[in-house]
Image 1: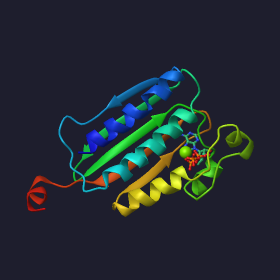
Image 2: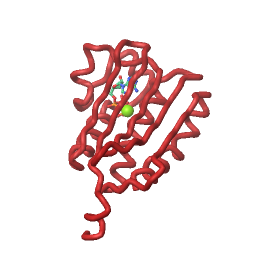
Image 3: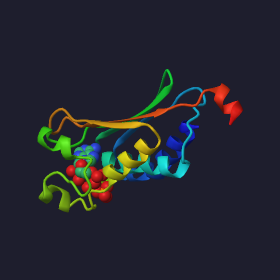
Length: 157
Ligand code: ATP
Ligand code: MG
């Protein structure tokens, strides 16, 4: 159940958000959503994206996590109102070691691998990951889409 995976990741990082006095909202689906997945890897993806949201958002900022069912897919949306990503950097953001503005990133710590690892894992699950960030300071939204397993197939597996 993708809801459980997201819940676990949220529980692990809620403290860091609270330490920055960030407002944290989190909605999962009412129903169980089955995904055929390596649980630990998908949790790692959520942890990567969520820790970015916390890291690149100032104190008192807003972080939202949403799980939504769309036909045969589930969308996990992680949205922040932090520093955002300049348009020129967006096309390269999933590259290994790519980080926006070296000076800005240096003080934050990190290697620039989080997003590229997340993309690899999501694509290995036949899913997709997209990042939106209109303007700097308008915040960032990451959308992960994964195929769901319907009850019929679940019975067969
Ligand atoms: P690592 O995840 O390896 O510790 P990192 O966070 O720098 O390091 P990525 O997670 O791959 O690396 O992110 C790449 C770059 O994208 C970051 O350095 C940062 O500049 C930018 N970025 C990622 N997520 C956000 C976000 N939510 N808001 C603003 N910038 C972001
Ligand atoms: Mg990161």
